[in-house]
Length: 597
Ligand code: GLC
Ligand code: CA
Image (cartoon, rainbow, N blue to C red; front, side, top):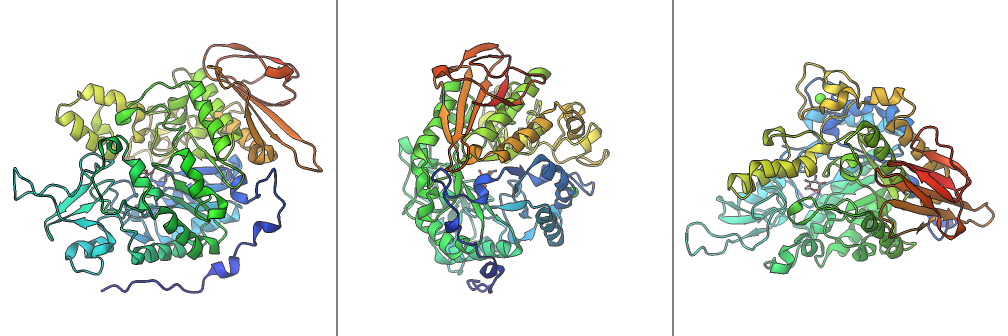
């Protein structure tokens, strides 16, 4: 029998307690703090760098490339899950929260990586996946073993509903669908009950209403914080408080189950407890994946006076081109601008925002929001998107490979995918004859998650320098690695990489890009995105910046509103640009510039 581990040793935190930020004067009404000023880079470890030729990226591979990240200007690394896992969902199904996934290395490798990150004055946040565990976690092994096991109530177990057609096969307890196809309930013959899994069958949901679960989670958080990690990205964190009694979803709710799931009655209470008992004792940054949370609800989680999380990933922008059933649907520039405008209006000085347009769950940035159809457009639009990411309001998150302008993979067959979401959807849709194979592939090749998960392209060599030339990478390397790779990008001063480096440097050089006001100059314009970031701090010269982005291939002549003039040119994605000091600008396909004004 495993003892519930609620006690925790006196820890480093008591020493490293944050010097209260209260002393620092507000900047434009905002409390200044390092995570507001940071540029974050997300690493998907499985695909970053393989150091031992087994075709799987690992921690030593990350350590090897820290100079690359430091040179780029990265302040914080967000590491997707590195914990022991049977990998039903690539590490988002954790078997042991205090162990490193064996494919990724050892705890000694982790410690070495962390020390090397700190030695370069960078920080590390790790993924906290605690809405669910793996079904191979010992908590679940205990839980499923009998109805009176002390761990039974760590998960959601319910009797099935009578099945009139087949009494020996009860129906699931309610009508919840899972995110990865099929019902969110799995029958377990051992105790003849169902358990809840909002994601895969191998990802049973933890019961946060059980105080012991909360204490066990807090304890594992302290374990990593005491090692010196600088915070967490919290996976689907709003889902931790379930609806009491788990009633059926209504027809209306079934259109978007994330909404009721994310708004359980104890969500804020549990996050506040986590903050009080754990987070507040360390100088950390937290970002919650705000699945199911609308913008107007966001301050409940991020308002600093409420003591929950620092910021969340709101999906408004990244899902702009998604329709029902996760298909693609057209979007317009005014819609995108309206999102950022709403964010600036709704989130006040006590709240903080994130800016991100890609991650490991979405297609590649340039393929999704830019134009990867020609070399010229790919390079320009990738740079344009990096410009936007690094000059909008909020902490920017760069996803690995986007700084090279990496693209979607040319998927042609379902067997080229690894992602459980794609495989399950294939079974549910194609195998049952609901859609044809060709229709299915046409959609998932555009929006499938594996597009972002193909290995990093370091060189033009076979396997792109991700692993040894003779190894078989866990997911195929994009054949365009012969032209899109870090070695080429680092050698070419006009590359996406060097541009991103300059855009990060610009972000760091001026507090206006962090704490400044945001104003959209022309919200209805369907091709030009023009906005300002401005900051007036008493005793300092005002900082005023203008960003102009031509979101398309059509050249535009654009006259700035209100007699405004573009001043000094600070950043331009087309080499040789000189236009400055004028109120009428001429922008070619996908041109992006930043000026003073
Ligand atoms: C989050 C992760 C995603 C994962 C899911 C279940 O959305 O980003 O990759 O599949 O949660 O943990
Ligand atoms: Ca490896």
